[in-house]
Image 1 (spheres, rainbow, N blue to C red):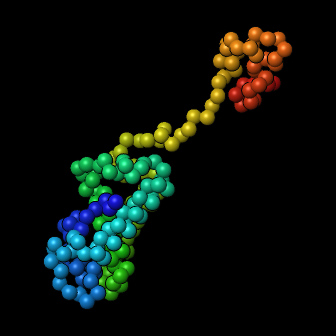
Image 2 (cartoon, rainbow, N blue to C red; image 1 turned 135 degrees about the vertical axis):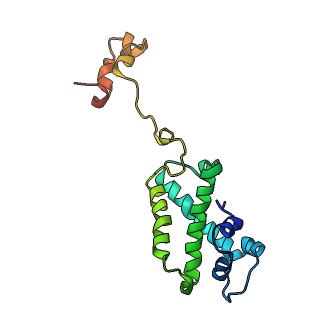
Image 3 (cartoon, one colour; image 1 turned 60 degrees about the horizontal axis):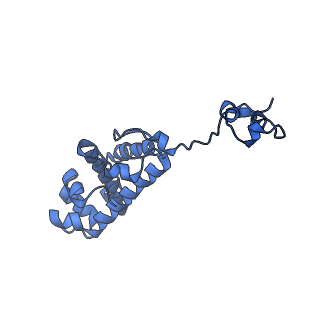
Length: 171
């Protein structure tokens, strides 16, 4: 699932330049042809995959969260994907790299690094609790207050001795 379309790329960057980057023989492409050109779509898919991989590595948000973006956050996601796609198109045509390419790469790759570290760059509600599994058991007081066979029968060891020391068991 691409997070940006060919039209998004054509609207954000010079159409002639994108056409030059997408073709090997520098033929002129119309705006409609840019948005459906296989090289452009492959660059957008690769950039979307890079964003998705960063999200998975960051662990704070899911791909579904990005699908629910609207308004300016959705536009910002499209900016990120289109910026990464342009970098991928530069890799095809090294002679067409602009003078400020390094600054542009740092801008978009810096955002990818933030996503990889779990930063909230899209103003999504925090979902940290969704990835934390509750692995604690009953407390010593809860075990002591149970009315089960181990509490009613004197032959069983007291419940407090069956807990790990970190949870208050034993001495």
